[in-house]
Image (tube, rainbow, N blue to C red; front, top):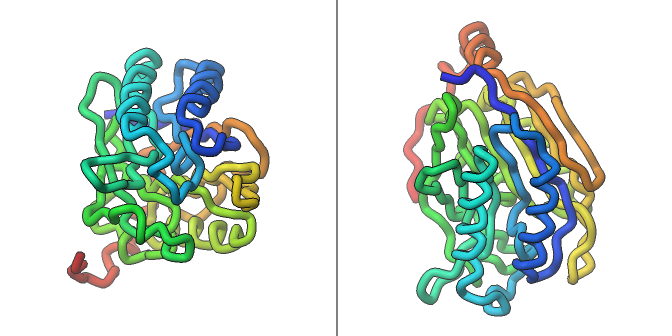
Length: 258
């Protein structure tokens, strides 16, 4: 069992509704990352930006991006994480994929679709959480607006890492900062948040604030510009902190109705 996990967070602008251009951009970025990284995290809807017009995207693009992720994961011997527009039948999903080398990909459909932008009217919401067991770490990946809902993220699964990918605008970035730190503290887990930068076609500005917090709410990395951030997570930090403080033993028990 691994005792550490090396993470690279790619905080970047996105080309609007241009999957091929974004795949090319991220391929170049990923080629600059050293071989000893275990997981690379990309933003929410990293091939299109936060579009409410999925009909503008060829229905095959989701599959193409998944194949691209699988090829890179195998070639680089690491895991790739990010969400994309995915068309399935007559439904659209904001679907996160966690793709590891030579393994069937894990997927998670965004549970809390962003009603303020009308995402709930366009994308089908997911109904179940995902826990990925990767290199000895249990990882719970979620998407953007999910961050505002602590019950959905509550650590009843014994996960070590809570991971959010996002297109979170500068306008509400204070909430992103506060909630990401809170999710780490209340769940006694690492909390990772990867956001984009730049402006989208609708004029929304994104200023990053991609961050990693440990189980005590201490910030390990932070950035407001286009860059790749690196951090290493340690299993014994989770074990030692939980054994010493035992706050999760006192959490409220509940059954979530979905």
